[in-house]
Image (tube, rainbow, N blue to C red; front, side):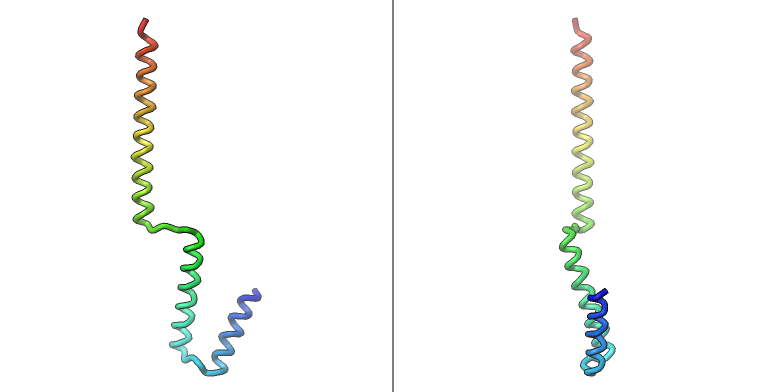
Amino acid sequence: MEKYNKLISNITEIFDKGLFSSKNLKKEVEDSIKFKMEVIANKLNLVKREEFEVQKKMVEKLQKEINSIKFKKKMKKTTTAKKP
């Protein structure tokens, strides 16, 4: 809440000084918000959608390979267990 009050205080101070027109203020606020969003996104270590999809396909492929190996191993055990 304290940060919010400080922000409002800064905005009213800018208006009082007449330093910004409404267009400049809008641009300044938009830039500030975009910057904050980028900072948050970087802290979260987010990845692009394309990178996520590539990783997802790789994991699916590896899971299929693991299942195939498990199946082959199980089949090998059952066929060797039946031999006298």
